[in-house]
Length: 212
Image (tube, rainbow, N blue to C red; front, side):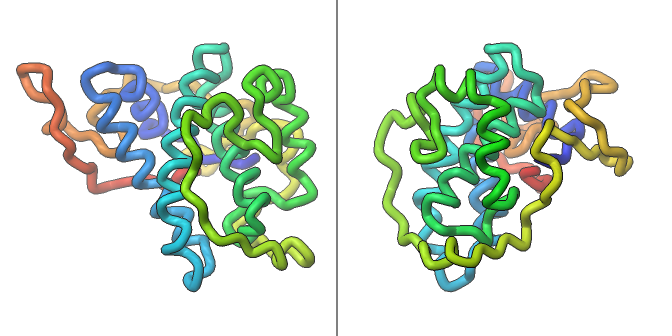
């Protein structure tokens, strides 16, 4: 899969791993992902998918953290969560929201098969053990699977995780931060979000990046 990767992604990872701001970052990431993918959805169906996407992306934050704890890189952990989302999109026939072509689903799954199987994740069951409660229902469009169109999918990137930096350079396997990152640069967090007494205010950052 082709992803973007920049300092904001590393800052969001740090925020999710930091007790004081992790819930603010989590809410910011959920909000961002839902907004971006609803923007890719058929406008006639988008609003009906909102609650499910919120719950789906909430659960994938837990997968992301588990993947990091199991030694996956930031890019790999993020790719795993994007694959979970794409499995769910496929199961619902939401092909216009997919980031990879339908015929690459199995190849992507196989690259992480050991981890997916250990978590009970399959294409048919995208969340596995991370489904702590049922996701809200949303109408399917199964007819789109008969002749799938996925204008937002990038094909030819099924053999590894590819990341594109702000410089436009494409790197296989992901990058590491070139300089220290601050949690205040994370999605949904800024310098006002942490107070001196250790409490958290929910303050959205204005410059939110693409989820990729």
